[in-house]
Length: 228
Image 1: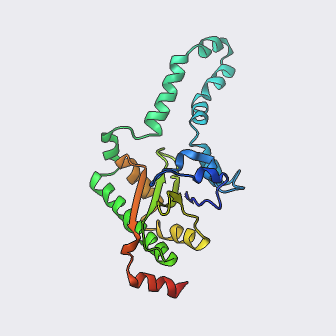
Image 2: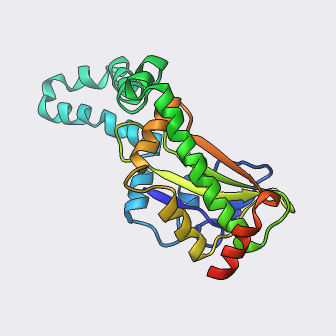
Image 3: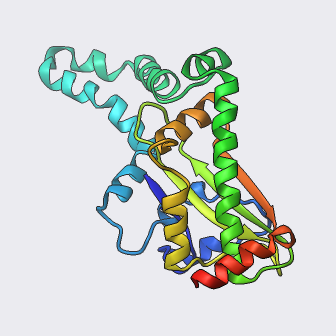
């Protein structure tokens, strides 16, 4: 599930204040979701990122057991070590890939790096078109791709464009630029799911694609003018 973050659409614009680039925004959680997104598929997927709610879900069998086996209710309720073990197993074995061997089983490192290279190439294409469209000729643009670290759950990807000119900021993208990201970054050949497996295999969940705007070719700038 891809979400393009831009200051004019997030529910809490104050979270867009950054002091350096690239800056991860995933930790801001619900604050970077669009206004009015409550109850949407994106909102429901974000709920899964809340660790406390995941702990409650992992522990939900215990109240059920107490209801089904009331004669053992006291023993079940006084088994914190078992409860801790259940939470630990769910978080470390089911919802994460926590060691190099398990990461290699997901995808060979060489293939994972190729996936990161594809994302980097597509990111540079996106940034080139944005820089050309805006006539930017100084400074750097960063396409910051962040993915959820949770395994065995549908992927969640946040993408933002950041720059440090004239100061660190998250660019406010228009509808055309957001659409460019949504249609260019992933497709049937390089899916969001493949990118997520790449991130899990590398143990790298923030990917920073950088473009020097002064290096954007005259051809790209003319093409942007022609399609404006």
